[in-house]
Image (cartoon, rainbow, N blue to C red; front, side, top):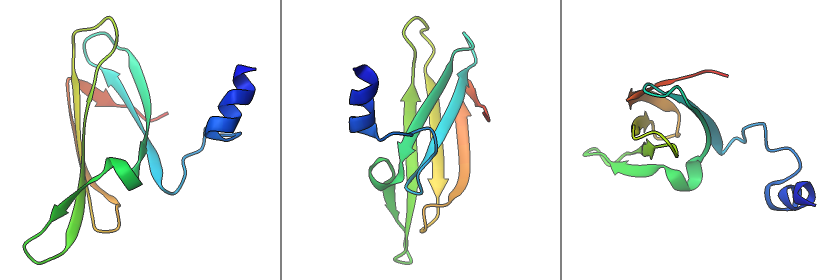
Length: 97
């Protein structure tokens, strides 16, 4: 029953990133917990209005688990086409799965 409900809400196969988003995988530097988040570019990126009139994007996220007091801070910069330019992380590390 829950599998059917998940398919209705999220589609049959949500393990592959769409062109409108990406997976953000991080590990806590204190407890080692891993976090796997899907970031939707359409509504989770914020706009930067540059002096020359162009628009770039940025993303800031604070991630924390249930039993660990550590807070992971992620900041990412994107160009006008929403392509990743740079990324920084505090209290954690990026992991590639």
